[in-house]
Length: 311
Image 1 (tube, rainbow, N blue to C red):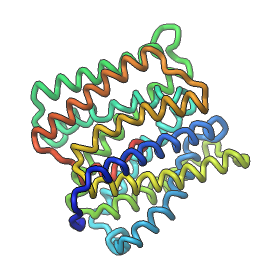
Image 2 (tube, helix red, strand yellow):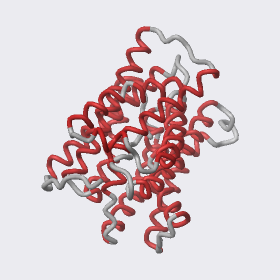
Image 3 (cartoon, rainbow, N blue to C red):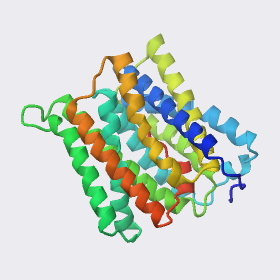
């Protein structure tokens, strides 16, 4: 189950991580466009199904087919799939209702919820510094969401979208906590493979709730989103082979830059002042958590290898 040792190459690791984050944002933009006409559950199916050939090819190239297909904790993989698929479906639904930068900013709440869940579920000691960073980040999230939660906007599709993305962030935090336990017995290849498999199967449960026959453009977007998502997942996993998790984690926040650029160019979306101010506080809180965990020697390399920004 141990991964082969690889020399540290910070430049390569950062380049791979940035490329992965960018591709995840391209994938999110494709899903956002497609979910104007296609249900979120159907989008999850395409995203998961068409990522699988890329992932299987990568696993085969690494000579890890046996490790991927024979899990030690099948029940654990099913639970990871259930949490991750739920988070992905909620995020995709939110993408159809909110600007891309806003979805990205709210999604930054995941590290905050992860710290809270680590204390509650894993008994991890959380002292004043990280508690303060979590509070700062959650204040930032509320600033981003506040325009969607006023008396005038509450109950609109946009407010529902914001709530769904926030719940998705909580679910992804639960995924990260679960993976910290799962990596103790499971190979990275198995975790990556079984998530795609379980997400594909679980997304079929949404079939009775209004799947549609997608048009040519939507079908192309969905297929490409799956392929690009698979490539991005591989790039994330590869980046952590060459660099420490504590070094690479802050580069997740580059997604806001990519989201703002893609949102403006493709969807004519301009981040609001609330999004910019709130996201800045969330990023600051997240970076402080990462810095503190690095000070405490918490390099969560294996867990981060199999946890991506979209489920």
